[in-house]
Image (cartoon, rainbow, N blue to C red; front, side, top):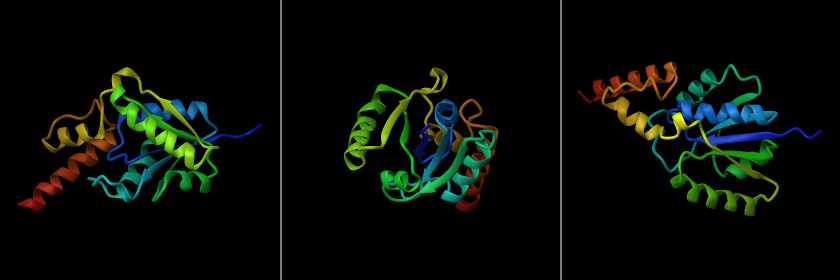
Length: 167
């Protein structure tokens, strides 16, 4: 029987309950899931790669078939290195689809044996984005409905430190 390894890539800055909902679904579908934080992203991040990995490892520890890792460069090259068969992508809304569809087709062209599987989070998480979470937290808003408790604390500490550094 073929064992299927899936990679769930993202920036995860920070990881949200929506991300974890998609991850939980993927962990039930595939033998092994690697949740992989992108090291070299076009996006500037609030948390360092080390901090994002630390949070990912902590909040995914309960899943026996999930491993947190990071990658730099092309996702398809990382997938090949990890002998992954599937890329997991979360779709929150129609607005995500066009970009994700183009990315999936590009990845298929580069690596035809690698499949992309789109998973939608539970509707109660479909509007959550890391960008919104950072914005709410920056202004001391309550993010408990959007992120795990550990992430909420890390956000508060990060913004408190930024405020101190600016003063």
